Amino acid sequence: MAKPRNPYEEEIDFSALALQDADFAKHLKHNGQLDFSNAHTVKQLTQSLLKRDFGLNIELPDDRLCPPVPNRLNYILWLQDLIDTTSTSYTERYDPNRDVIGLDIGTGSSCIYPLLGCATRPRWRFLATEIDSTNIEYATKNIALNNLQSRIRLVPSKEASDPRIPLNALGIDSIDFALTNPPFYPSLPSLLSSASKKSRPPLSACTGSETEMIYPGGEVAFVTRLITESFTLGTRVQWYSTMLGKLSSVKEVVELLVGKGVRNWAVRAFVQGGKTRRWGVAWSFCGRRPPVGVAREGGMGVEKGLLVFPSEFDFGVEGKGGSGKIVGEKVDGLMGSLDVRWRWKGQMLIGVGFAEGNVWSRAARRKRLKEEGKMDVDKSSAEEMEDSEDEREPALGFKISVKESEEADGGVSVHIRWLVGMDSVLFESFCGMVKRELTKQGS
Image (tube, rainbow, N blue to C red; front, top):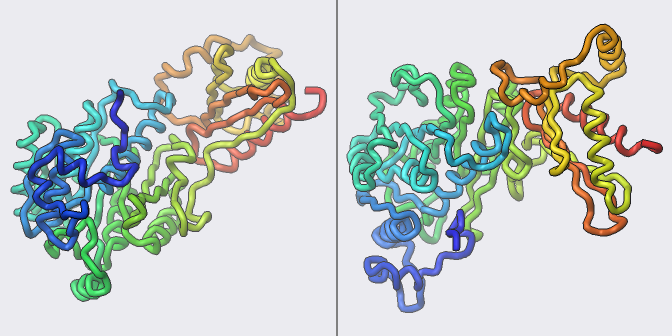
């Protein structure tokens, strides 16, 4: 039986963990619960979960942050989804042969994000920056403990003013993603005030240094600097991302991105067992679009206006048994009448296409008909579209899938997935055209 991708979808069974780990059993109360106010107990929980579920061994200092494993895993799994669904192959699934390089900004003593990333994806590698000397010491030790020196490169930062993403200094042209879990508090008084309002320390805290927990201006100020840097690096990083601890920070960060002209971003809420909620925000200067389930899962409280334009569109077509094939042929014929690169797989009722602009307007169609009267169209070009050497992204990339209802007279559903492009108006126009053509009377 395959292991679940996320072993923490259900509440952690502390009693079962105690039976599997003698060191953890020493911290379990008679009622099967843990004392989360005890820093050593929280540390042992992190160590035991990493060992049992991922085969990872780590050592942690007593005076640095102790990361909660489920929370950190949620972030890594979301990044995996972002990478998997926005690859140049447009397959929208995990490619076990793809090499991926990520950067963890401020990896901490545990180096937990690179460790989890490498443990769950064999071809992932990491750069990991860190400025605190104690964290550097322990992160170096944890990388070695797990024999990951060939896959995780620790990069000590000398000054707080050093680039968040030091690609130039490292002689690296590009990476697939950058992640960070920035300091939460803007000042020491705000940290102390927050702690005094809690009946017990949060699951994510053992004890932490000021470097780890405090940044002037808080997490928004930290991410603002990252956003500024991202505009210089552009597409050298496919996905920039951050975890945020406050809902208000999500609003500020997304509004800053949109205000600066970013048109491809994603928001995800991380909730573990109804406890502490966190959010992930990612942005890209590439046009490859993640699906709705990856880009628009902000959870309760996130305003709809903060979510990116939906990358999926569905509608139904009336019909009877066997109508799926008929609708599929209409889709194929419609795309064949347009100036698009198009490949249709009739047995699967799925097609992928790319357009350089609005080629479905009346003017565009008239122009195409005029040109076809003068020359033969090379039909083989569609077969070669995935092997094109032109690295320039098309104005619109899309996938159309047709599915027949299991009911005899249940009709047919058509799903349009926005794969690539920066113009939501163009995608919306395309979806409207396809729906009109397939649902109009007599079609």
